[in-house]
Image 1 (cartoon, rainbow, N blue to C red):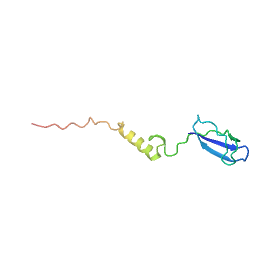
Image 2 (cartoon, rainbow, N blue to C red):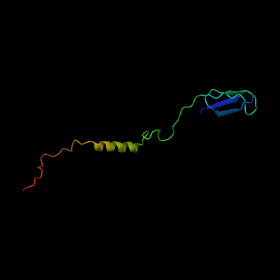
Image 3 (tube, one colour):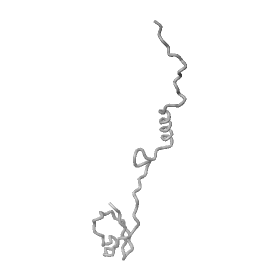
Amino acid sequence: MPAYDYQCQNCGHEIELFQQMSAPVKKKCPECGKLKLKRLIVSGSAVVFKGSGFYETDYRSESYKNDAKAAKESDKPKKDDKKSKDKPSPSKKS
């Protein structure tokens, strides 16, 4: 539910009310009781997600990224790991 700011034109009292968007505009001031309450136009607020990330995989720590990179590199076959063809394979003599 959005919050709306109101100010009384008679006494200057300001309040913030949480209302549905379809709810009628309040007119009666809770302080002085007069029908001089006016809804103020304020800048909208953005949705802010606080914490380490909205999804589990967002905003990973540097240590996690480094570990993932190291694991990915260790899975790749190395170019220097050629099988040596010079060594004869051991054969069994009968």
